[in-house]
Length: 277
Length: 306
Image (cartoon, rainbow over all chains, first blue to last red; front, side, top):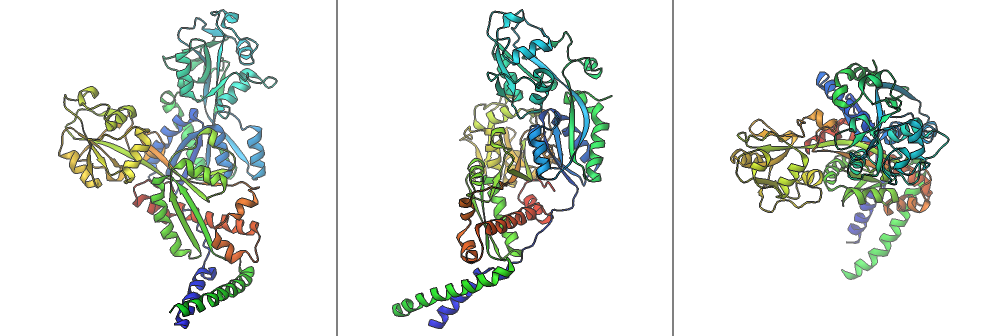
């Protein structure tokens, strides 16, 4: 009896002890897979391109998800994805993060986009200069009557501060010396568009692809965002749409990016972006 | 009997102590000790985790994996607090949930096809319309451009992964139609929809076939490709999420499982235990992303991403 109990105890302990454990570090499968994350503005173009690429290359797995420019670049640096979709350059904090992780990133421009200021359909204002926009977004102009509108305080909205569209707005409109008014309500693209469609005092901005007939796009310095004005560079709020990779990206990844560049003219209309040439 | 027991207990305890001491001494050279991985989050991904963990533990006898289901959000909070090692999530992070320490490994994608009888003239619905149908807010095909007849909703058991998927992606908190016919398998779902001209149901991509009409959603056709790119609206991503904070507090390092400590506490500090834990966690995640792991993901209805 005693012996049996002891044997049992010993055998339990022997099992619990980790002497048998073999730590096997299994590596990820070698099937050709690319994970892509980042800016919603670039996403549509990449979705169409990726679907076409997969239909031509049945062994390829290309997954795409959004989350914004910051998440895209962060995921590329921490190794959870291989391509970042970005609608702005990498900000300082993420550059430091890349340095910390010893990762070098390479920029591939695939298309152009326009950032467009938008107002409510009932707003009589239809054009603002870059300077007026800057004053509005830094609280130096706070009433629509100061820009030939109604006597109505301006309701400021902005894209989330982690979005590439905000980065573009900051770079092109607000400038480095100024900071955005703390009164600006941060929102994602679709809620922002909805907010502007429901608030007559509102102003916001979004990527060209989010323009629809629920809101009024403004011209900037008298120039509307059109295919010609964006391609020629005349429209003042043009920006690059970018794919970032690591500097040691595989041939497969580079191959896919080449595919995107070739496919951009074909999908530009559906994706609401503008080809480089 | 009772006497024997009383005598055995202290002896057994003494032996345990001696063996552990000896074991720990031995282990100080081997770096090898028992590891426990705590996983929690999405109830859908929990089903996958159980199957993945079972297979992983066959070849990794020194690792025990414990999985709890309780929703993506509580899972994320727990992994950020260091209370668990991996949060399993069936959705993308919100902007305000994300920070630089979160590492979000995509492990699978999931999409549901919406099916009707081949004679049904409806070909395309929006996610909102699908939601209205399955919650019962819309109950006649004529509202959706079909014939003037009542909609027959076919559902699945609330425990099935497809039901959870529909509730999660489409219903958005709305209650599932109480008058629905419940099919208890994918085959039964197909049978119900084929045999009823007014029926509507849903299936995982792998279970779709030509005997039923698969609806487009907001103009997008369901396919492996459109689910992988997130363009098909009734799709979602599965993530294994870890929190890679370098200055994680000693307190949360010390939370590592009791078993780990019993065998390691004599010779290893919390940092060492933590490092071994991280290795075990990454080894499990590597397995999930391996060919074998992805095969298990596909067997259970999702789409492989590696």
